[in-house]
Length: 190
Image 1: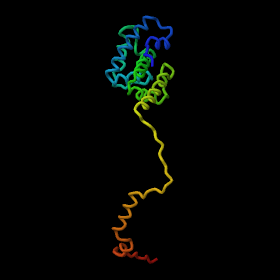
Image 2 (image 1 turned 90 degrees about the vertical axis):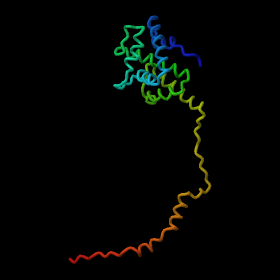
Image 3 (image 1 turned 30 degrees about the vertical axis):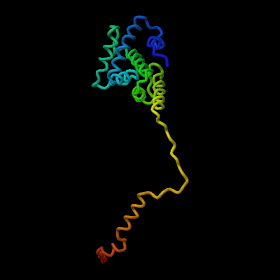
Image 4 (image 1 turned 60 degrees about the horizontal axis):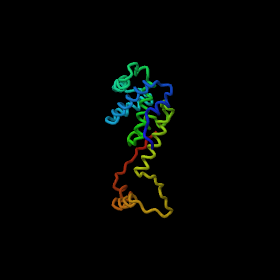
């Protein structure tokens, strides 16, 4: 698999982007990628941005990601440029997928709501994530096996033999009914 090239991928999404903007986004990409490699919660935050899912109230993701994107582009505003934030988050996640980080495909698949949500790259992130998840399962050696159904007479279940043993130890109902006091129901005279 070829190495992930941020500039080429970004130009595919934003063909009219200025060189200064591309350079600023490349630096932001590198910083976000570094933070994502050190803290799992940042990967989750990036998934929120990539799929444009509302952030939880207690999250500091707006401040964190906004500061990264504003560092080299003072005109950037996380409130007004959510699509641009989604592009960078998508590319960071795609880079993680191309580098084979094993937890990323599962997280992206969950954030994508199994493919129901769309990213700015028109489902490309979800498709790459799904393929990475398939490859991850193959690498781990997980094999789905069909259940074997034999036509031979099934063995007697343990539960059945235990219930037979229980019946042998208790008295039959006819003996129990003799021990119970007889009750009479008074007939009402009407």
